[in-house]
Amino acid sequence: MIFSYNPKHVGDTLMVILADDHNKENFVESKGNVSRVFTEDGTVAWNLFHISETVALTGNGQVTLTDEELAQVNQLIQAAGFIEQLAADHEPKIVVGYVQSCEKHPDSDHLSVTMTEVAPGEVLQIVCGAPNVAAGQKVVVAKPGAMMPDGLLIWSGELRGVKSDGMICSARELHLPDAPTEKGILVLPEDAVIGTAFQVGK
Image 1: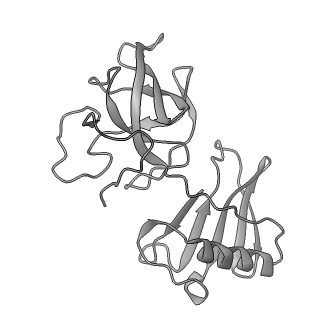
Image 2: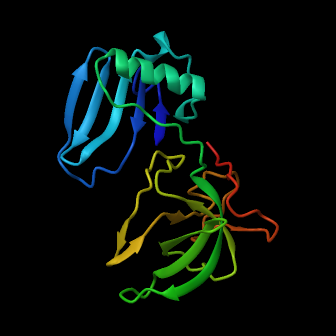
């Protein structure tokens, strides 16, 4: 679940992104200041307009809501006449990972298929196009449901027919200061702790 608030460019609207719409047709149901965005498979997003009248949000871009603020959002959704409610999700989506294995993609000469641990006991298959990716590295992983600093949303998908559940990130993609211009993922020190949140740039 991604919360985004950009009053300068979008207005006083909290956007809540729940899932990938897989390029299916979107429908909108609006009640008062609340709009539900959905496909034939279910709800994919919510838009809550004039949000500052109820919730005092700070930040620009992706924002983090406290449990109290999430409860206020759920009250707005319920008061508008919707039954659905948002569940709290405090799991970090951009984290330190460990590349357990790295093999050539069966249908590409520049892609690699990795098995990358993103938390104790949680391993994701991630296709990576960086020339410097290798087994044994500590890296930064954007898990499905992450929002990158440039607004890119990360979802599970396929690259050349191989399932990929996330993205191994470069310093430039993370908007880190003094990021190198050459292509390649960011390789972290050995003492980086798997599963811990990684602080991106702005």
